[in-house]
Image (cartoon, helix red, strand yellow):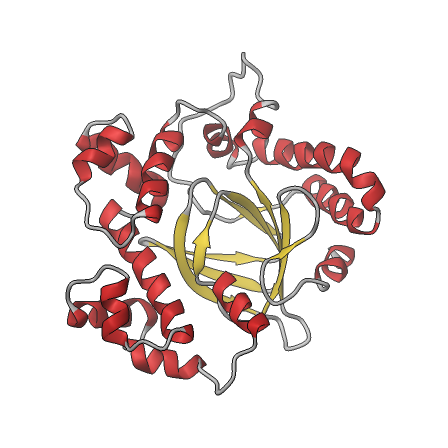
Length: 296
């Protein structure tokens, strides 16, 4: 873990590409609000609290969690100290890679349960694989051959753990995660538009009742709550970096009532829009900082 932390300290204060396929690293001190895409996330230092729908989880150093579909999340990063920021690595989940690890006669797969987003202690074998993966930053001539092998090893370790059933479901093109993923992708692309649930259920090839049940089982939110979180996260970014006022931004992200927007924004972030944005605004914001805040 000590060597892993020293490598990840090279990251910027945002999710940083490593040059290794699907692997990113982060060094951060405060914000954890973002849309998380499907990934395996390993905490190396500090702690993170995430609110995803109606669930709140706390992740500590040495633990990992899985995100099976795109989910909007809010939360807080807890650094150990000023000189010991939050450090983490992530591996974007590629269903094709996962599927190569699944045996056709696999008898251990279980139905996806209520273990979504829960923290799991990373076994020593997984941490060792991550260390060998991150060492490839200094051996790019070896990465093309070794990185895919180590990626498979990391996923193999996760498949053997408590979240293995969820990871298996990610790889199934006809599973309910894939069905829900079609709906979440549509909502992300059309988050400013009103929608009816019936067409989304048909898109997911489910009845309305089954769609509601499975959507919430996977995302911890109803479809409307999911859209609302997307709108509010986007609104917060616009409040920081756009010149429009809160009312204009409310309409821009799809709200029809500025007062409803203000109430829901304050409920999620703790302050009304203008007061919340004032805490973060500075006279001049560098392009690097703007990009970092957008990432987080």
